[in-house]
Length: 465
Image (cartoon, rainbow, N blue to C red; front, side, top):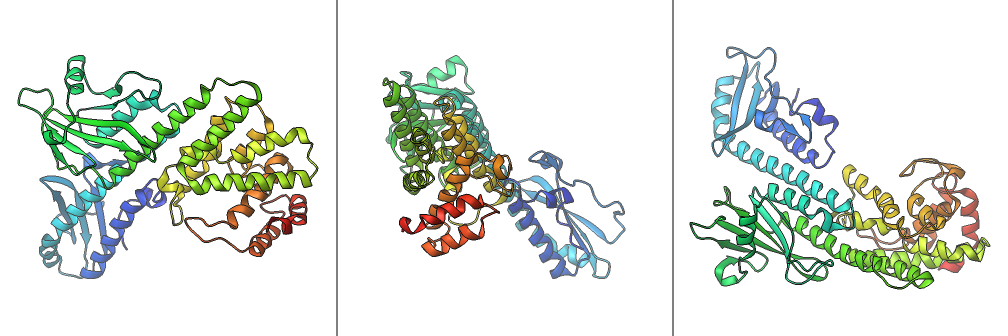
């Protein structure tokens, strides 16, 4: 029997990065059981690490454990800290000999465990920051909370995010701060960002203060998205950082997401502040939001334009009244606008999505509806955005409604959306042939798609080549 972690982990092992930690532990336990002919192996975490993502890990020894039994408990120590214990059970093998051999392996196991726990904590911090950035397009309103998460991640004492020029309608260089009193923030804002005062690699700069300064160490991280912004995050420590920190690598994704969120927020503000009115303002809104979406992913932008054209061909073939055309076309253009809230690491991932990544991706229809609701009450737009991933058999999202309960305009658009997705290259696969895509559409009639709409779509399929 192999016992790597308690059953609550096995049941929830695919949630938010926890799978990597459980898999790492299980592989180690399998190796030890096979290498030393053990009957059982446990990995228990120390009390200070007894919760990950809100659910408990096993921290007690087996009920029948005692020092004279054929069980042994070996501490996993890294940098003087007890991270947990390795508990082994050997009925037939010489336990003392195994324990002596394992003492040479324990430092390696403890070091790896420390790394895995730190990585696990980072993944959860990253997800918290991403959720915050997804919660609103007015990113400036949540920057203090974002800075709080970043400060905690780096084990810093304070942080500032500032702009060299006016950004987001603000004339204040400091866009947000966390962890300062009034006197401290004045000093922090006076730091002159010159390379000769510190050292770095071109992407970040370390600065060191004088003994009497409030902050002894500063890390300067310019935020770089897809368009250059003169925005910088500065992290401050009152003393030297307790560990060697390197900007870059895993941290890059968090700072990239913050930069992109700021860019989206600025573009969103420009759309809201347009001084045109009536139909001109409406079209400016559609074009502006399409531009925001294109900032994330050029292929997504191209997909929206293709499905808009095909959708209008389909709508006219169905003899949809012309007064509905504008709403349908706008809904097609904006159907994926909610992907503004999906991280690049998921949106552009070349392989299959994990369960939590898929769940995060599925939220894009809700984000899209939230983004568009302040702009329009057009039923066609909002129904396409919210329901284009529902399925005829009820297995879709976000509500799992089925059949004719799904708004017809969303049922109509979903056929077009899937057809174009299948016949286009994606990061995770190459495009299908036209005939292959149509065969799939036929097979899914009555399952994924409205069978009557599939029949009507096939009537114009040859014109779509």
